[in-house]
Image 1 (spheres, rainbow, N blue to C red):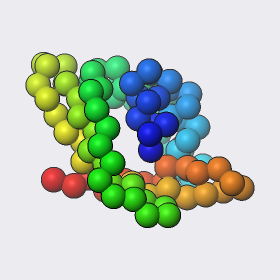
Image 2 (spheres, one colour):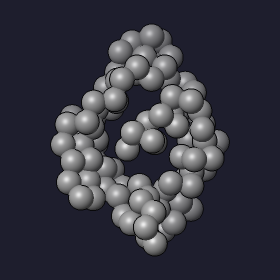
Image 3 (spheres, rainbow, N blue to C red):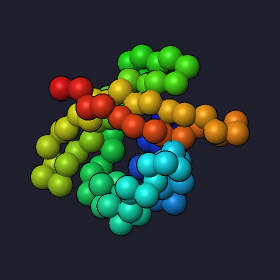
Length: 93
């Protein structure tokens, strides 16, 4: 999760795209990922809980109007041939 957050901060769109699980990657576009990454100023990642294959986190950012926002999510990851992929996430309000 930290690597994906860092990729959002740095705008490393290829890394983000290729770390989506292969079964879900077709639902993503690099253009949409880039838009989300670049329209926000990422401030902080807070890991709240983690298990072997899940991470609950809060990502703090400034939106395009410079309002502080919090993206609170529980993410699921799947391992394929020793590589971890982002499989899905559930937003938490």
